[in-house]
Length: 271
Image 1: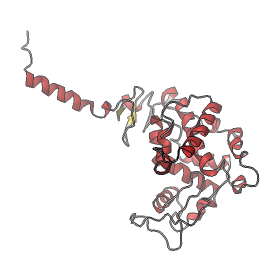
Image 2: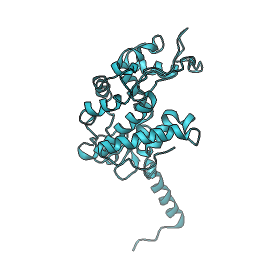
Image 3: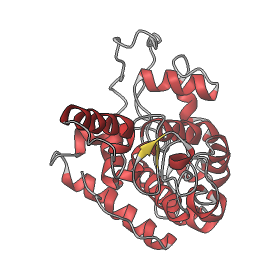
């Protein structure tokens, strides 16, 4: 019979197991960038985490576990136009925003509504359009109503503000600030700093800019609930009791679209 391990050996083994667990210790996810949320709710980077059943992150699994939703089948003409019709024909966005422009953007950002189950994908679509509805008044507004604020932060020296240009909200998610326009422009291939107005002039670029922001700031928090998406978009102004009416308006749209798409909205809806 082998000798029983000494106490230091037991402690060492315990520490080794904890170290080996590494990122998997974060049950229910909310993983850091580059990590997958497994079907069991743990973070990691191997196929056990990123394969079948992966909920979020750089998932590789297909089928019902990681394939997500078919965006084109979910965002039908009826769904898209049903939102836009609430704004009225007199809105500037009525002849600007289109499903075709959205689908062009969705094809570029193919991870949108993917990485989890079909229901997860539908919830992400519902969340995206809930925020779009709130930000634009049912796809009515193309640009922010108050255009006096330049939204220029000179501390972001990588994205210097161009003379005379203002980086107020434009597009479906009201892209704002010089550092967002600069980075979005680099990815989408337009002059975000020198010509921010293009986001309010080209509907394809407008939706690409919105999905660029979403995929870089919101997509990864979907697993935490709708409230986390509100915090990622406008948490400084609406979360933690700062503007409950606006926050709850977003929740209302999200619930409505989840019902239309036949999925449960999940938990943690407020922030």
